[in-house]
Image (tube, rainbow, N blue to C red; front, side, top):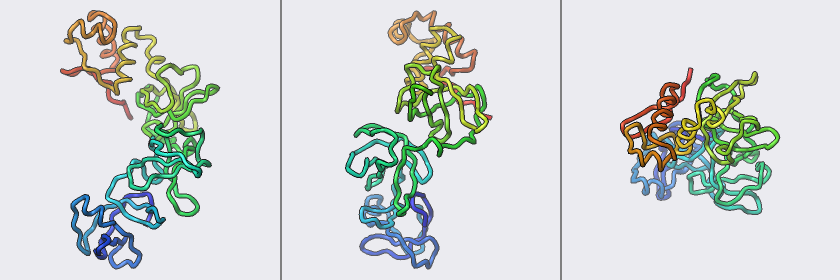
Length: 284
């Protein structure tokens, strides 16, 4: 049984405390799926049934199964919110009954309650699942992106001397150089970026929206920045009311249509009946 992962297991027996699951039928080593979970999900199980569960350790440090899907799995990456900060570290909300420990030794900055931080899930020396903020060497460098592609990245660290470090698709190692930083690039924010290069080690060099669009004009840049901040969709198109356009962007409808035409021609946005959205990411 591998903690921190979802896997299919077989019901060996069902008792008053819940269902006891095994990796293979007849295996003596079992893990409990609490009855409270079954009742909450209105599930009834019988010996021999196969079920997919996530494995972790409960508050008494015992391997246990859950039907819930956590926000992160072993070896994965995700921004998680700090619920409490204690003497041994911070506890994060990862979607399960028992909060996830982020030890002080695995923190790269002093964390604050209520803030999100990008972490990876690992198994410590004692066999417990824990989180680490030391994600830079863990992020993958084998993406299929090529120069000129557009994507999104989560900003997990900013070094004024070097630039911003991003997790592209919460998986790949990316960076924006300090000279390309702008007001949209902030810790804990997901930003739309263009791949400007790929280093020999596979790390992605990136540029945020505003820097990439300086050549297409101020109005087009304003529309694109607003699109980025609205998670890729805006309820305006070339049929929208002129006053709505002016209130949203501070420009005339004619200027908006010109800017929109430029963005459409460049393949950077798509127009729909109810608005405009960022163009789909271009992959190999």
